[in-house]
Length: 88
Image (tube, rainbow, N blue to C red; front, side, top):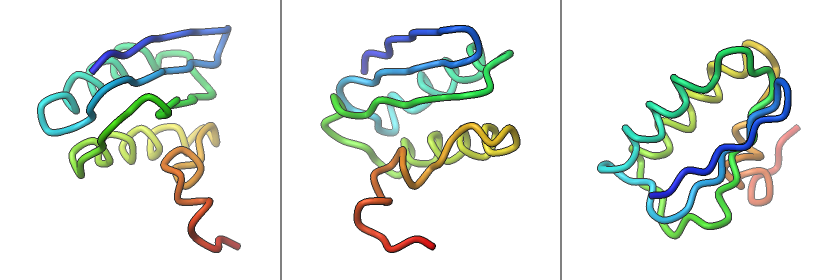
């Protein structure tokens, strides 16, 4: 998996490419741990991912938990569930 970072002030955009699975999830977890200092808004661009396993979703949900404390990320929007679920 390739992770590209773009930071503008307190907004971090991570673009993920390839497979987010058991093998690569720790890589994303490490990038998040080392990059979230001072970040108040996180965007995960998953358009170039070809596969996401439950291990990958766990890392995304962990990031959501951390960012939701700052009100900076909506996990349903990031994962695409917003388009298939009715949320109120």
